Structures are given as structure tokens and as C-alpha cells.
Image 1 (spheres, rainbow, N blue to C red):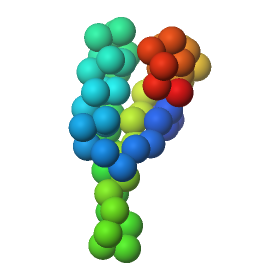
Image 2: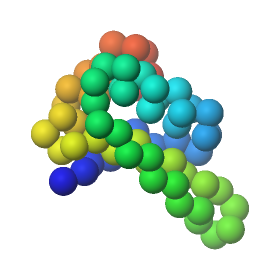
Image 3: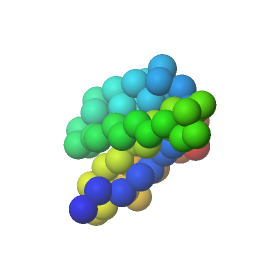
Length: 64
């Protein structure tokens, strides 16, 4: 099961976070959705059992 660990409106931020987590060895999915034909949201997803560890990495890197 996949779970969201981060949401951003910036494609550049999504790419940066995806790279950080991949470099740390996490399996990553990026899901993008457009709402009301205005804004695109990028969800960074990891496997559910790795979510806490992924969030700790993001905290250590100063992202969360």
C-alpha cells in the first residue's frame, strides 16, 4: 500500500524530493492532479511501512 508523505504545487520541488528519497533507497511514486483547472498538486508517495522513515529523512534534510 502506498501513502503520501509530502504534497507540493511545484514540479521542481517534487523532483527534488523524489531524488532525495530515491537516493536514500526508498521506492517512490509521484502522483500529480490538477484541481479546478488551475493548480497542479504533486503527491510524493512511499510504501506505507516506510512512511515514517521517509518523513524522518525529510525532517533531517530540513524539508518538513
